[in-house]
Amino acid sequence: MKVLAALSLLSLMALLALGVSGVFPRPAVPPAEDVAAEWGAKNVVATIVLGVRLWDTLFEILVYAMTMVGVKLGLRLLRWEHAIPPVRETPLLRRSADLLLGPIVVFALYVAVSGHLGPGGGFPAGAILGTALLLLALAKGVERLSAEIHEPSLEWAEYGAIVAILAVAGGLLLVGRRGSGYLIAANVLIALEVGIGAWVVLHRFASSRGEV
Amino acid sequence: MEGLAGVALAIVLAGLGFWHLIVRRNLIWKLLGLNVAASGAILFLVALAHRPGARPPIVGLGPGPSVDPLPHALVLTAIVIDFATLALALVYVIFLTEHRHTQDVDRLERDEERGWPQP
Image (cartoon, helix red, strand yellow):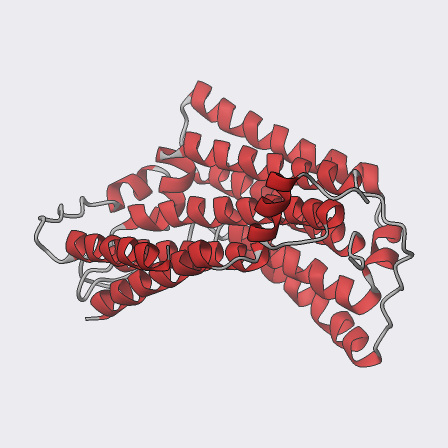
């Protein structure tokens, strides 16, 4: 079994290496600057993600949202018999969280808003927002943080962000007008969606921990 | 040569991840192997986009040709799908651990053949 697995893996690696070794000709890169200029952006990758491959990105966001729903529903079915001890608060982490939370959120906003001009975009901004929430959860404890956050409004914000992304993208597809305003709006909405989703996963996993 | 080294490292990473995915018996280790293999796939795509002496795919960042922007856009999908797969699979592992009290694949299969032990 192990020999068979090793042989198949080695053949797979050899196949990958053969594919990139230069035996097969690689196509020349077409000039992408014209596409970016048409959308009023400088970041070619953002133009491709939100413009040329818009359908792909939309379904990617739907896959992300379905994952959030799956994690939420799946872990809601579990019933833990043991009481979960609260996390002890450490002053060092608490002070650092107070100090760092504002800059991290501002940086996430900057990355989302300037995603069409430089490195960045909605998904990295959402990940940075999730990191800020993770820091806050580490400092204050997940239970206390989730008690402060109004859960239904968070859900409404999440689903509203999805609907808004679909509306913005659908409007773009209907109207056919291309511009940087659409890119900014889509990036900010995607950042909101990804950040809330990261918080949902973090909260569910952290609050359903327990002994086996 | 950065592109070549990146491709070699990506292939090694993917092989390592798949090796753990196949050989390990613990489900958590299997998921970690899957994640490492996904990292290898991401690095593979990014290294494929590399051209010698190219600049990042952002307009006005210097002279010379741009790297291929399409694999960079594909990487975004790869990262998100990887994260989604990992989160959902971990939920199922939590369920399995809660109901069957094991993460060992061999033990799960043995119990499946003999009938589940009644709690």
